[in-house]
Length: 120
Image (cartoon, rainbow, N blue to C red; front, side):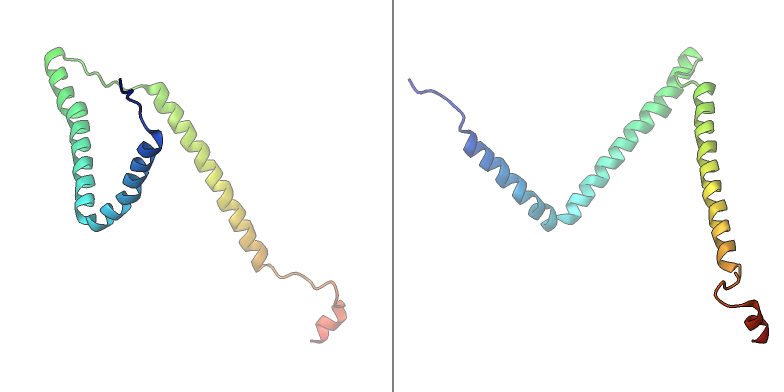
C-alpha cells in the first residue's frame, strides 16, 4: 500500500515560484491590476454605503429609531485630544517664533572693546 505524504520541499518550491512570478505578472498587466484594485475599492465602498445609509434608512422607516447613535462622551473625549494636540502645535509655533527673534537680535561682541566699536 502506497503512503500518501506531502513533500514539503516541493510544496515550498512551488509556493516560492508563484510568489517570485507575481511581481512580473503584476508588472506586465499593470493596467488590469490597477483596474482590479479600483473595482475592489468601489465594491467595498458600495457595501459600506449600503450598510450605513440604505439599511439605516430602512430601519428608521420601520422602527422609527436609528441604530447609529451620537455618543456625546466619545465626542467630548475626541475634542479633548484634539485640543491637546492643538496646544502642542501652538507650543511648537511659539518656540519657532522665539528662534526667529533670536536670529534677528544683534548681540554685542564680547571680544571687541566698546571703544573700538564706537570708532568704526
